[in-house]
Length: 200
Image 1 (spheres, one colour):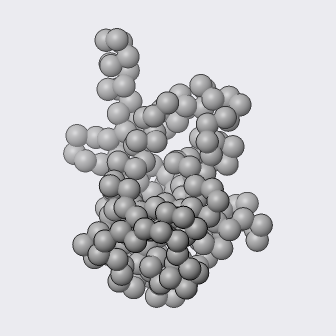
Image 2 (image 1 turned 135 degrees about the horizontal axis):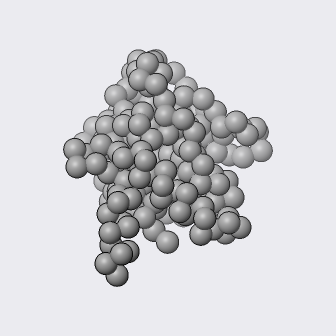
């Protein structure tokens, strides 16, 4: 038990100053990959526990300026210090500035990624003050997701989305248009990612 606790402490994905410990994140990903060689954990076949390079500050700043947004700090520091996906919850963390290398018209996630980057969409105010449970129509889904960024696809058209502005900025919400609606997970980006990272 003591050895396990020491091991987890050494591989903690955060630093005491509140930033991300990129080495610890990557070490934990190697550990997860070693324990899942057949990629049986949900989504592993898509992201394969791999991380791309971190984004240069100039690239992140150019994205923010082009879209008129300030990315929430915990997400921004992750892509700047750790990597721009894809290893992450569900089918993996979507890239920020360029499409997935495998992007095509066959997977709805790529349409979602492009839709988010329409001019002005990310900068629009997030319209919800409270959860919106239940089935959503196409027009309502399009309206309610303004001011949010798709983080990951969970399957069957369900997405984890990051709120970019307003009182809920920095929160992760789940979008399930067919059944669950658009509701908060109760976590911010750090908790959302580290819960997955430190899980079994």
